[in-house]
Length: 81
Image (cartoon, rainbow, N blue to C red; front, side, top):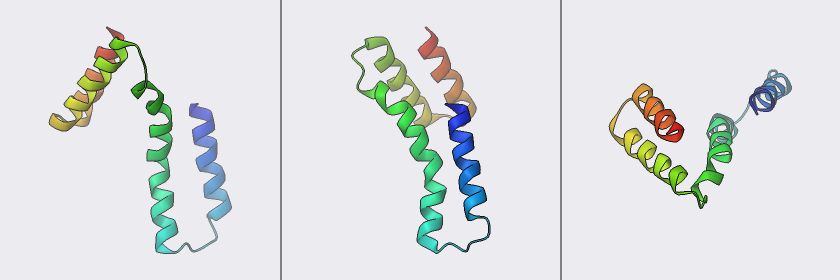
């Protein structure tokens, strides 16, 4: 998954490096990494496994209260337990 995401970004960079994009296209290109992240995470939101749903709830709660590092640690810890 990492390789596919990285190569997709590289291909986009090399394909668009000599072009000037309009503001709307720039916004779409900046939002693309977030879209990839949602694509990876979204299937777990419809999971029927209670431990995954609890881990997601804890991570979302942590994201609304703490910094990124603490949120990542809580997310990894809660999904690992």
